[in-house]
Length: 487
Ligand code: ASP
Image (cartoon, rainbow, N blue to C red; front, top):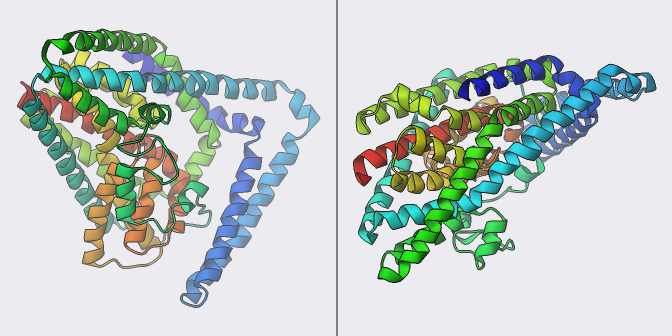
């Protein structure tokens, strides 16, 4: 099964790289790209006007990008014309590309990814209640809770620290190219949010959006908006209370045990489909980004930045591996092999939450971590333990400062250290969530959020890498807590 999954990833990368551009063309990719570029242009002009007085040189620099963007729009418009042609639309190439676009999207996003998400809510609720009640005693829950949070925070702090050191040494932002920088709407909407506000939002929810926050007024609303954190809190308390009411609880606990086993069986079924689903996700994503040539173009513009992030994530993964060997006394290779499917799912879905079903299954079935530890550490970790994201936010923000030629003071670095750790806690386990919470870090040190535009083009790719480290951190935590606290 695992071999099949690796093979399909390889095939998907090949398809996406060499045929992705055709798929992108057939699906009308250029028109969408034009829209983005037009917005990018507008954003630049707006920003230039805004800083005209304070930083005339920077304003001029931004305006100088406009002709290049216009040229690129011109090229894309020609592409649109070419593909708007009857002969092309009748060609075999067009039909094949169109078919592959629809097919990869269907098996990946429309089916595999959705089924994974579908299982998250039932899985979180049942596994959390089963895990908590099997601890048997409210005091034990406190102990495991304390050490789990301790693990989350210390590893995140190490990750951020490592990120800051690396980006300061390598300085990828000096002379980086931000010609095609473009900031998405959902990021712009966060303008002005303070770190305290964003963190408080985790507790109280977003104003005007019922069902969000740790204590929503309706638990079904929380479930229907995939507010996993609220469900976790509810399940912890519910499970904890069950352990205090004696015999009356037995039937309830048995019910949730049975339900949990059934959901895990369903996860098992989904795994059969994983190779094809993964194939679809990878091939479609590369095609969506315009294929191999477009990817290389973006990569070459930001290669130093990508290198810094990748190096940081790699070092942090190595650090986690050492923790695993020392504190859980585990053979790291065996452990990693056991969770390989989960890591693969993380790379392909870019979502810790969607990966949760698979990581629970891997950790328990392949690595023999007790259900009591796994069902506590993993669901909670998937929503708040994000070492990869924490490292990424710090690197990205300092990178943005470097591209703008801003020297950060030590005090600002400390602020970045704190806010990046918190921003990672606040990020949901969904694709590119870290990009949105990065606004907190930027505003905390007074950098313009339009800086995010510089890294947006490559974020989908780095998101996959950091999500993998996020998931790896959760699974390592499960192993350590199991060995040290639960047993
Ligand atoms: N995609 C990441 C995750 O699910 C969050 C992020 O954007 O950093 O873990």
